Image (cartoon, rainbow, N blue to C red; front, side, top):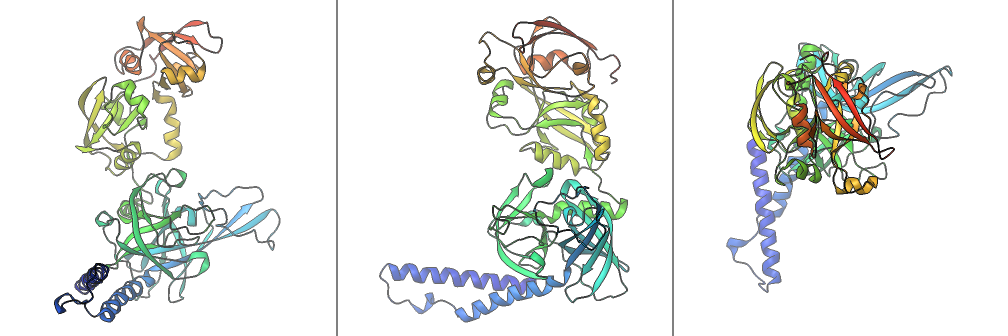
Amino acid sequence: MDAKKANTLLLMLVSFLSGALIILLWQSGVKSLPVAFAAPNRSEAFDQMQDLFRSVAAENLPVVVEIDVLNTKEAGQEMSEAVPWDDFFSAPDSSVPRDKFDFYGLGSGVIVKRVDSRYYVITNYHVVGDSDQIQLTLYDGRVYPAVKVGTDIRKDLALVSFETEDGDIMVASLGNSRELYVGDWVMAIGNPLGYESSVTAGIISALGREDGPDGNISDFIQTDASINQGNSGGALINMKGEVVGINSWISTSTGGSMGLGFSLPINNALSSIDDIIAYGKPLYGWLGVSMGDATAQLSEEIGLSADRRGAYIYQVFIGSPAWNGGVRAGDFIYSLNGQPIRNRKELTYLIGEIDPGETVPLGVYRAGRDIALTVTIENRDDEDQVSARNSLAWPGITLLPLNEKVKSALKLDESYTGVIVEDTYAKTPFQMAGLQIGDIIQSVNGNPVNSLNDFYGEIGMLSVNIFNLKIKRITDRVNELEILVQRENYGE
């Protein structure tokens, strides 16, 4: 099958190039062509191209299912699903009591695995959410009740399953999304607006798109294959007939397809599928930092060259892998396992894909020099447990350089020096000592602070437990305060 498809694509390419040559020569005044340059039989080329699209569609229509969900909610209770389209759920059913409402949802899913009589279907979390009832409809019309096996909210994925003794149900062939190139032909299969088993075609418009809805940590494949409401959870197929993506969201100003569809790469879903089947939930690696991208102003402040990419560390959580490995607030991580890091989102994703217990090297820029650190990654807790660690953030304050732009925005005198507090973490030592948003830190333990590097160099991470800060509180413009920060009960 692959050889036939390869030959078809080659013939299509030859036909296209030959046609292009004919047009160019005609425009240049050449009215006839030698036999050697004549285009191949166009009818045959187009027939083979059509056969290719037909065969890919026929192979994959049976592995994409329609997912119908039902949620019963109390009056006034908000839907918990992360739904990127306003009209994903229908209007409430007026036939139920007024204190409860039924919400029906529609999406798509892909049959990705079979274990004995159980079939596993991957879809988006925003399709099934906290559904009370899930029903799957196959391409041939067979209907099965399904149960939710587990979810991966950070990637907007959910795995559901159904059981049957029917042995003729097809399972998707999964491809390698890392082998995709911009310009590759793809098909999107799903149930847009309830039109079951719809197939659209397009190309890969871009790879590595970020900033998906609701903080999705994955990157995305961008395609112009038409995707609409109901396509969520469906398959993005390459011309080998392999699933290379899970259609997840669209960017639109009208509510309909505008040629800006986004699919989660299948490689990014594989670990979640395996973890959910084995453990009932995804396993993520955890570093234990709060980080952001280095803006141009921040890069200038810490002496980072303009071509450096990576993630700037604002907080390190006490007792975390980062803390134990020597990572400090104010560090800039530019590589992981010897590979360059583009930004904080990429570092977040890559850390999450590392198996807990694995030790990895970090490339770190600190106060003008590069250093090498190693950290042993741990298992990431559930979201509520991660949030509960906020009181262990060190230093527990987020700082900005007091540059000309900040001084101008705050109408501060040019003579002001130090770093300014942008945010504080509750119940951390600096916050409990009285430091507030907008305070300017001018010295630590009698040593002047003129930059972020000065501040982070003074507080260190493991040296002393008591810090005496001199600050200027700009709310009244004049007061200089001494704040004593004690970390003696903060643990190490």
